[in-house]
Image (cartoon, rainbow, N blue to C red; front, side, top):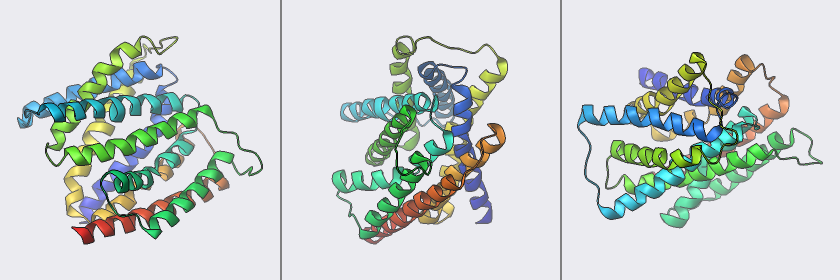
Length: 294
């Protein structure tokens, strides 16, 4: 059990640090080109893994349409908006906004999957949005100035929630590796024309260290860390594991402090407590309800 939790915490550290590494990468690569290149290396890894496991399966026409939509919305738009937002948005604030994804996922599940909304979920949502208000306004409650990059991070959060719902539905008929491979392949193909039309100017670094960071984060964050998480999640309580994932904003905060020399403010800490507290309150009750229904 301790070993499983150690691996899960390592995954959270990797995912949380991705906000800072993404902030670094968008200084040297234009966002759509960065999205396309990362998806290229992710797809290559997934194809290799699929060939190794021999788990590629045929998918019917209806599911192919769903996988196409998942690839466009949950992969391409999700990653493109993430890197577009990080051009100007603060990585810690971005991590805090994305930490509210379970709240939106819960509401979408209530609408599309007929799962029950609870009072605790509503209370948790209120707490989380109070926290977002603190970190977005930087403590200056009299005026609200929202960075344009944060609006793109909100798009990232929305598309991530949609991806979770679509993946949950598809996983009842298709194995996770096939879903991941097909959706990322669609995302990569869709990103190719946009990489040469949306970015103006197109920026590509010729520094080998930048490429190493790009490839390393693509493979480790979206490949190895996800596989480690999926392999160890079965050994621990699901609700406790979900609480661990809420540590990502704190990891982003600490990583930003060391790599970007960004100071940690009292307002960010206060906002973090509200957001993480609200998400934990909501997701704990939500998972509890699902367990009862199951």
